[in-house]
Length: 201
Image (cartoon, rainbow, N blue to C red; front, side, top):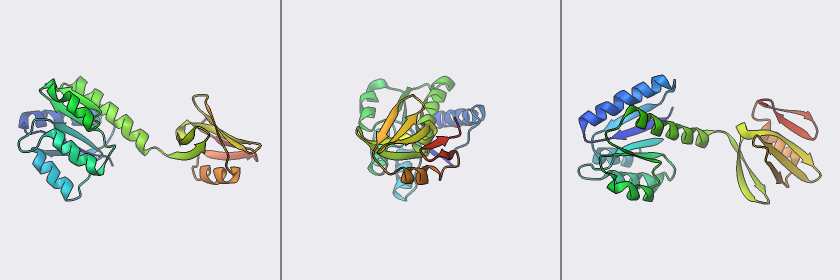
C-alpha cells in the first residue's frame, strides 16, 4: 500500500489536510496510508531511521529545518518520489524546482487545490509502479508499459512492438525471448508463431 508523509507545524492546517485526504480517499475510492509530522526535524528523524514514503506533502516554512531542506534529504535516497509543497508564500516556488517538486500549492489549501495535486501524484505513482518491459531499439533503450502494448510480431530479423498510440517500435532480438517475457503476463497469448497479442485489446 502507498505511504504518504504530511508535514506542517500549524496544527489547524495539519488537521485540515487530514480531513481533506480522508475525503479524497473516499471520493476517489482509493486507499493509501499517511503519517503526519508537525516539524521537519521529526520527519527527517524518521527518514534517518529508515522510514520511507512514496510521496510527501511538505509545508515550506517550518521551525528548525525548512520543507526545502527536508525535500533535499528525501532526494538523497529517492530521486523520483513526488513532493507537493504547501506554502503561504510564493517566494520559494523557484527553490521547489531544485528538488523536482510536482506541485506548489499556495495556502489556504482548498479541497479543489489539494485534490488536483493528489490526482497528479497518484497518476505519477501508478505509472511508476505499472508493469513494463525494457527494449533496445534504434532510438535507444525504451520502457514500454504493458498496458500500452497491443501486440508484438516478428518480421524477418526484427521484432515490432505495436503500441496503443499507433506507434511501432522495432528491435533486433530473438522472438522466443520476447514471448517468454510477455507470456509471464496473463493477458498475452500467442495465437501464431509470428504474433503475441495482448487480449486486453
